[in-house]
Length: 365
Image 1 (cartoon, one colour):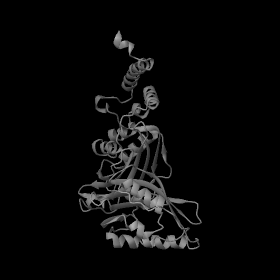
Image 2 (tube, rainbow, N blue to C red):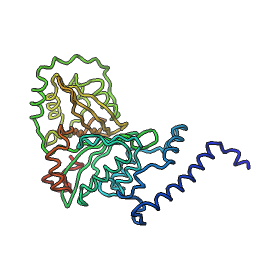
Image 3 (cartoon, rainbow, N blue to C red):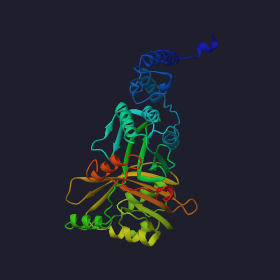
């Protein structure tokens, strides 16, 4: 009796909902069309896993009301979904990804025209990704940032001794530890190289000079803080100040180009080439990574209303705390990109027209 007296009214309600939820789940699951022990974990044709039970909504309320969370780590959750659950290449993994999402998730797949909204739609979208591979190839996790509330990862399609399409994905969790936002961008099949600079220069040729930027000089050593300082404070106003944060052996991958940039001299020239009036870089979302960070951004061009969205992933050298690796990937202006769509249709396992030898691009470089 003494133990029972310590239970609150909310405790009794929670237990009641647990019992009710168990009944509802068992009842609905056994009535699912096509049920068998083999699909007990769920598949893309098992509708039970594409809906939210009354308990899911109620338990989320209790978590929010009490400040309780599962202590979910974004880095660990994403690693598990991609590597262990195979969410990009198996039906059960795709469903597991959907189950990890919030009801109001926004999934910006920048290969597509419009964002995917809601848990059920995202689950179906993940299932369509699996189906599009036609059972061919794997999805390799190359790099992942160490953020807890959000993280980003670099990936590569692999198939039969070759590797192909690469890309970057940013994932953000809500306070309940559920995936609430995703932005994903694959590399462009056609990489314009220096034509990008020429095009941007022509578009912004009438832009007035940039206003001077006042900022307090800082020396952050945490990856996410380095990115915030460079893009929120310095804002490209001083190339010398920006270069202070790059390691001598920096490897810089910008997917507008076929080849990586190696060393500070090449990176400096690259930054100088893109430093002219009329380009405004806006940092949008960023993770809380310590030695590595991923962030989403958009670029506004003078005289145009549309923006170009992208994702960047930065890694710091553990000893120097300077930037040792960068991956930038911009979205295609046409969605889906014509060459990308044809390549995925012809070679679904690789997603590109011509692959390279497996392991020839260390870390997806």
